[in-house]
Length: 161
Image 1: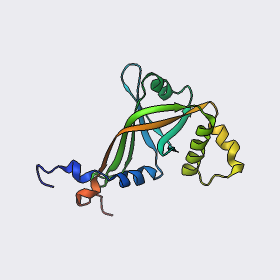
Image 2: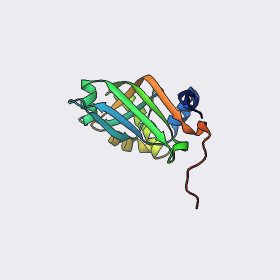
Image 3: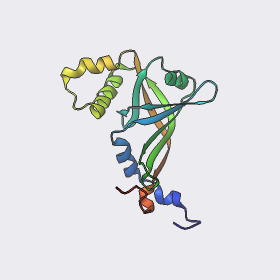
């Protein structure tokens, strides 16, 4: 790509590509704002609740304390080891803290299936234990930023051999 070319437009993922990417099995980096204005960033497993990214966490976790004070949340999903392979999605939005047992259980099953395998009713006690003293945080997205450097068509910088 030459000087002056808008690479942002070239590397941006389509909505379908974004959806497929975040539905792959991977952790996300979730960021909230601490009481002193600094960023609290942690790696999280996640699932989907009502077609939105969501995760479960301890009720008294720092991220929950932060979100009760300030709903703003940013989640980043990334992949790639070399510049020409980098791709990712950033979701910027507001968090909804959920303590409704039915909605929590739905997310618990989704997370279980994403990271452990098929859910059966015999596994209900495991999922219920997983959700004990926890809340679910649903991400209501205001803005999506994405990048896929593979679209640049750059030569590989991977070491050979």
